[in-house]
Amino acid sequence: MSQPPGWVSVLGFIGSAAAGIWGMWCVVVAFVGGTMPIIGIQTEGSVVFGLLMFFIGEPVLMTLAYWVFTAVFMVVALPATLLASRRRRA
Image (cartoon, rainbow, N blue to C red):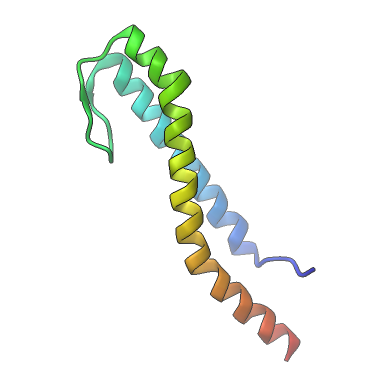
């Protein structure tokens, strides 16, 4: 089995870091109030909502972000990886 190109790991790390930062930003907004980034939900903020967001909302958001990132990544990376492996064989 061939190794994927090095940029695949870098792109995966960037996507994971961006999703993690976004999720924590949403949790902080749930505690203090404001508008959550990207999804646009406005909240006045409270400890109860912040805890619910931390234990229930963020895992759901991370799962959705994972699915979206994986779908986009496959559309971009799969053809590039196939082309790179075809070039190595030739």
